Image 1 (spheres, rainbow, N blue to C red):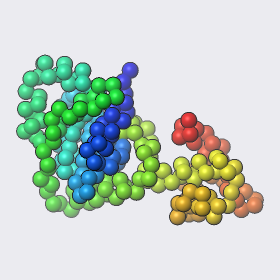
Image 2: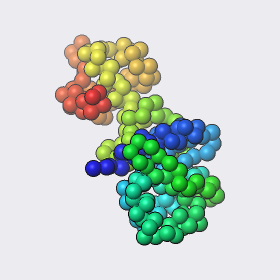
Image 3: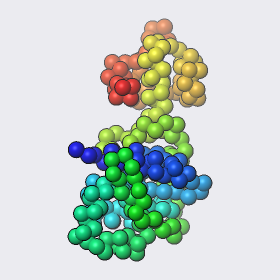
Amino acid sequence: MMKETDLFKPVRNLFLSLGYDVHGEVGAADVFGLLDDESLVVELKLTISLKLIYQAVERQKVADFVYIAVPKRIYTSHHKLNPNFLDLLKRLGVGLVTVTQDKATIELHAEKTDLKKTRRTSRIKGQMISEHKKRETHLALGGTNQTRVTAYKEKVIEIAKALHTLGEASSSLIKEYTRIEKTAEILAKNYSGWFEKTEHKTYRLSEKGQQSLVEFLF
């Protein structure tokens, strides 16, 4: 059975081919991309509903281009029942992407949004761009209902991977291994509970860390 996350890879590959740098789950967006100064949001859904349209219009407050992405078969059946669907999206300036297995296709190009310069929208857009630029890996899948992999969480995972390999190491060695500047701070604060300090003042993975890291290793 198809999940929203199954739409992410083909959609990401599509916009990568158009020059965008694309990440999943940035802010409230399933997919967020940047091309120079232009931002892109794609909402991934398995069904077409009025709620999806409202969601797309809301995203237009913080992105230059907004698309919805749905399975091709869903769009085809919906279009038969509602032949004016594309006309509605055109009026709203919302683009449409359809996905068949591992291929995504743009059925309707989004119109560039005339972003209103309010403090709120500027702040939210700025936060999304900032989060996007901090991402160093692509661990987050768009459309997931699980805990989001933030830029900070990415660093925690990379440090945990290093300890998985090293077994036990000092913060300086882990920093050298991962090239993460705030390694010592992340280990000391240990918000995730993934690490534990030994009597030799080195670090190793805690039991929780070992269990949590499995999904990112295999």
